[in-house]
Image (cartoon, rainbow, N blue to C red):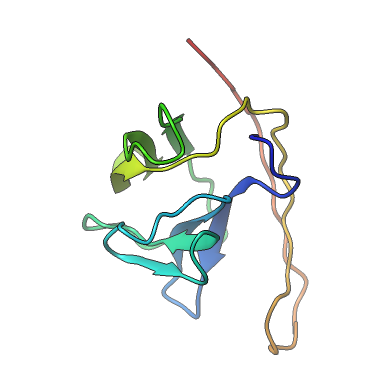
Length: 136
């Protein structure tokens, strides 16, 4: 999305147990104003944590993950939305997110292990059934 080569919105399963869901926004916009986030340099990537009481992710079970994203009207307007639910329970509600200009160009499911110094000790599975993408 946007004009940046690496603009992304990434759902993460974070551990160690009990696991939680987080969303990382990797935009060339400033989102350091958001509460309950971990940001690197600004503008740049920010990790959005659940900001309402959230369920723990139970492994080896099916979960329904839903996300609502509404782009901001400009890269500085603080009126974009990022919300996500698991099994019908709201996990996070951010309503002042800045997004870069431009349109979404790709949706991707890409389970990845890495980015840290931990060693993988077992084989994991990531199964999905349906993916629906809608726009106004």
